[in-house]
Image 1 (cartoon, rainbow, N blue to C red):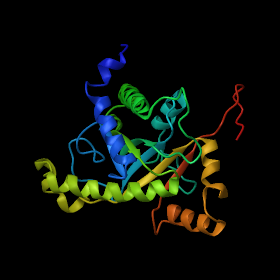
Image 2: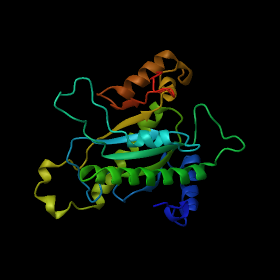
Image 3: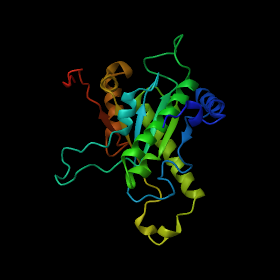
Image 4: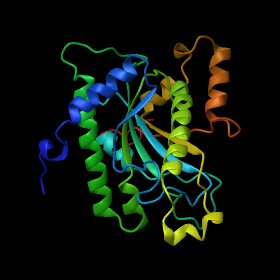
Length: 259
């Protein structure tokens, strides 16, 4: 079935997105969720507690000018197996939630004549979130299907990944606490509460293209080499923010991996 944008984007979405965008641009809010597939995001649908010690969120941070099939492929990609993963393990544990993130401050780019406005990009990101859900639901069942219904579109006012991770983690910790405080666990699992994690720390995995990956480690985006090392250590260290990076390979038209 073919859907028109008007059938997916509800009336009032654009004006609502503009209001949130202005709050972020004016420094009133560090992060705003423009759209979530359900009100308890990033918890899985129907739950305000978690069954694992961390809540894994994949983040695609891009200018989305426009969203592409590469963005969709990254969004749908499963977590990679780590080199020291047990051999019998067929796949890594799936992400619990997904985020499409737009920064109103880009480290390299400024809006030029002819570029899509931020509101138009948020509309396209909303459409992309629908494509993520549609493809996942069609190709998956059970647990994976429920995860496909756990997508958010967000805006932030930070130009670098190391800055975004700090702001996002602080925002998500506050949001998780607010969701738990305003919700009661389902009766079916209330007796198992001791085995659940009502306040799981969020763990971010940034899904990057190769060019963006190179910029993450470029001294150009840091005040000094010493500051770069300190910030990246905090970004990646298990004792601090413990973020992960997944980088997509670049392939030539002949199917040969270039990078």
